[in-house]
Image 1 (tube, rainbow over the protein chains, first blue to last red):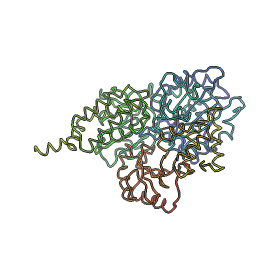
Image 2 (cartoon, one colour; image 1 turned 135 degrees about the vertical axis):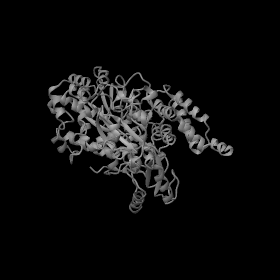
Image 3 (cartoon, each protein chain N blue to C red; image 1 turned 180 degrees about the horizontal axis):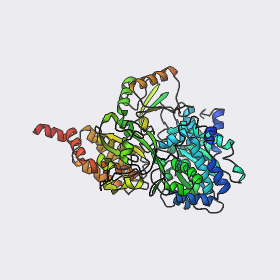
Length: 440
Length: 178
């Protein structure tokens, strides 16, 4: 059994409620932070912990916090990114609905550390039922003196609100999220300036993922050094993995980083192996945006060692032979899966979710969907595979925000690793198959 | 002059939401208010409804239109009392989302994107709803229906028919039984 931090008490009956949560040590970290630590000391511990952004980018949290500008007389904001929309990812949903106070507690510690007096949780509209759960938890936190004016008699004030979105993947990008929170379309902003300088309402702002903020409480309680001991190397701590697809036990698992991918897929503690005893074909390890890898490459590194569940090991091999930990959305595909058709669902997704601001993404995602649709309809030729490759290469790196890259990478990796399957698919579904039949 | 107006209770909720933001930043309440409006006014945002929200926030009508048309949860045309949103992205697709959509099309006698003639159901295929580990799934109002089978889908449709009420995103529902 690996170490559990975020989900240490997720099976305790009634853990959703304040009383039970408090009985299991909830809010002790706030007491410790506010009564015995300076805000700077909290930031220092987070830096030492090696905690990295759990939303997908993996950027060191302590460093992000240290960028926050602190001009006199200007409010600062903390915004929790609970827009979780990356296909294959549902960990924040689990954490917020099951143990809502763990997010509230983490946000109080983080707000204190950053000198923030107003914080928002921006949650995707489809999670409306969780809004009710979070608002109840926040109400309980106010009632018990953890939020509001003069918290624990320290003179520190904090207000926390839940803001709901309305269905837009792009709002998971932090500047699009801020636009949305300001009541606008979710069009990402050009950076710089980064939110740390000019974020919400033009004020210095930190945007962090749910899981990142929830992890801060443990760091306050046990110290950054203790957190850094968990995991492996620069992949410190635990990670929530959302496991889905063709596996026996889909669900959210908290893993200590550094376990093998093989163990994660096949052990009964986690995914429990492939559904119906079939063979593993491919895995998308970190949400739809990261490169798909065939079975041999996801299980084993080029040097023959076993691949691990960590930022570094999953990225080993670069874009040619590796992938990314991303959001931890782990989608498993068995031997019967059509890589072409699965890619179509991704291409359709990115086309639907492109905000339309940058032409390479707006036009490119539409063309990628169209070409894959053409393949499935049986009108494609082998030249269309090259065209698909060409289009994705022209999106990557040419857009304001990472959605363009996120749309390109699944296409590039699918063709890179499964080109033979694309050729077969086109030959058996398209005009080529007619030629084949006629000349047979 | 249109007679679109929030009920007193809804107006109180709207005012409370508007107070969450700093002075002069009330436009931040736009998306929450559009949700309130859609739930109160028959499940969609008519031009009159949007104009009313603009007047509440003291912003230009176009500022409301451009937001309402950007986000996929806002309906700019009338929809059925129960909008069935079936997730179709990868994990759900791997576990049979297409079959669920097809089953619903046959059962309701409509195509994806259409509304039944009695105005009861609208069928919509949507992108990832964060229910990948409990796929296939569909959402009706705020309620997630997960680990679907054809039998389960049939039973849910029956229940909706019997209840006959409009389902909204603001419904107080319990999704996860912990």
